[in-house]
Image (tube, rainbow, N blue to C red; front, top):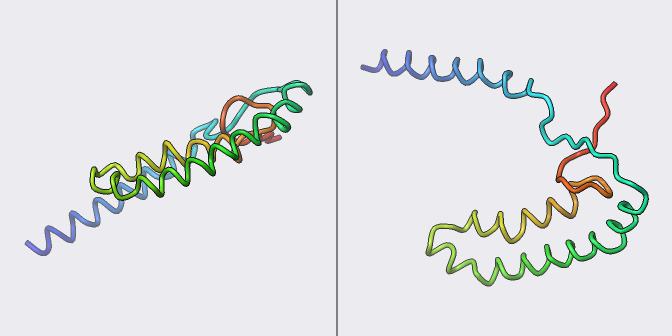
Length: 108
């Protein structure tokens, strides 16, 4: 029985190691291909980012207040994703003037 468990663990480990390079080879992960205008960048910098930063801060406070209830309901991570992580990504992980969250990368 122990010998079969070792073989099973080795098989699972080998499968995980074989599959992981495939996921890294996918093109376009968190890559944004937008070309925003100067007006879009200025509006984003002066209007949208401060509002999103305030939304992130207020969402963090609301999440802390709702933490006992969401922990009791079992959806603590879902509440964190909705109230904190989503606005945080829109604020900090988005190129200036872009509409999608992600990094603007040019690989040449």
